[in-house]
Length: 320
Ligand code: NAP
Image (cartoon, rainbow, N blue to C red; front, side, top):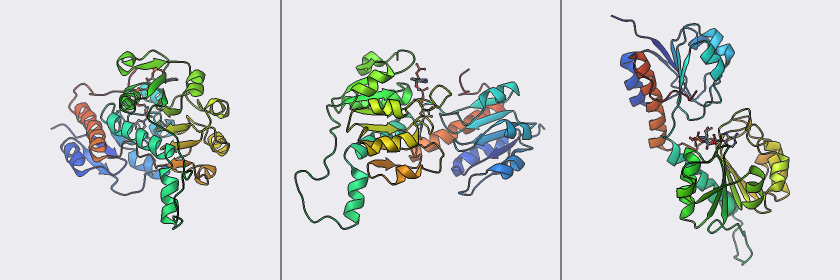
């Protein structure tokens, strides 16, 4: 009988996903809250044929060099900027990801952050809990209108389109910026424009592009200065696309007026200047964190691994 390949699952996943994998692999799993990192990751990955990783795991040349038997890396995420794709290709290591299954949940979180930042939910909730509420005035805690406003979406792909679809219910005008025209833009009533024009025209801006060399610090001090006073910036894409230090500085000047952030340059560390600001809503990379989305992601990663073990075509390899 053929020997089962060896798999390392680097982070805790749902029991049903482990049961799906178990018949096909000799399994080493990490059932702890702690990410495997540094030497421990290298040591446990060293004799593996396959890796099941998540967005927080760095699959770089050092890790690949330490894993001479490695044939496949399946990430339970749609972003794959944590994996050195070129180095994997050069070594003949297949890489798979999980597009689609987290689209709607992540679009929901973009909206949650937009609404929370525009209407000052985190700030006012802290104020209430601290016992400051003893009066009501007309000018108290004024926020920005979301309904009827202009929404700028940077990255009109799967998630960007789902965000635009929701904007219709809020009677919003939608602008978007992509390198190429989005095929569904007309159906969504969205108008393509240059990045600077979008930043200057939109009342609120959502970032949902992949992290690449091209998008690193796509939004820095110059771009932030183009945004409207009182506007909201939401980043649910990846850390490093926004210059966090520049954003903290810009938020102090009210341009943009508020931000909703799910991702950060040095996750899990958040720039201390952001932590000090009242006009930013911060979540710990929970864009896809609903049970159905996370189970869908983990199962799709597992489906790719099982397909590989059975020598079938991979369901979702990363695009060439
Ligand atoms: P997608 O369908 O591939 O969409 C990406 C969009 O970005 C495309 O429309 C693409 O259009 C555009 N784009 C790429 N490079 C660009 C550039 N340099 N300038 C302008 N536009 C650019 O991906 P998706 O499924 O929507 O996911 C998008 C990203 O969201 C992922 O890569 C991931 O990092 C992030 N994400 C975060 C969370 C979270 O938990 N916070 C959850 C899910 C996803 P063109 O190619 O035409 O430019």
